[in-house]
Image 1 (cartoon, rainbow, N blue to C red):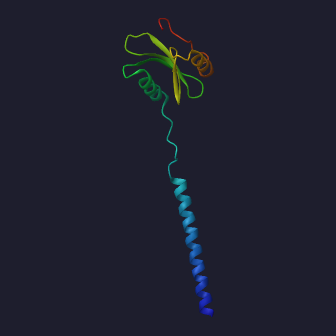
Image 2 (cartoon, helix red, strand yellow):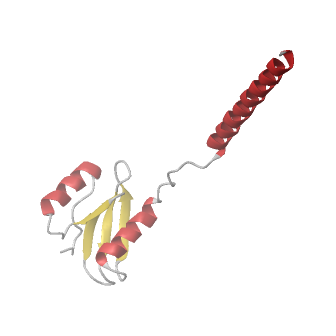
Image 3 (spheres, rainbow, N blue to C red):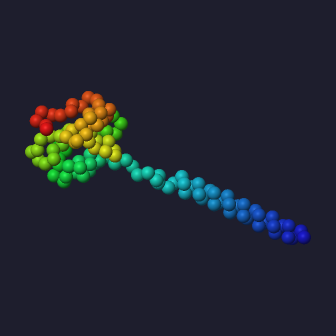
Length: 124
């Protein structure tokens, strides 16, 4: 009986040690793995992507300035030589001054870029 008790104790100790090692390995893996969220897209790249998606490949960025939070405000042309159009870009959206939502554009501009003027000379 003494041999059986000793064998049971050894088995329990080995299982406990394996559990501790598994927990340590899991902790090291969690601590060293890259975070699940990708790094935020740089503002200038985001603005260019949004402009090209919304205004077309020929659109050009003419001026931009940082706004509050991660917003960017500026002017773009739908094609070279075309009149400038004001925009407000936030990470998940871009609005233009000539969009059919002028009130929403104005509110976004006031919220994210209070010092930014709405339209340059010669803009539509």
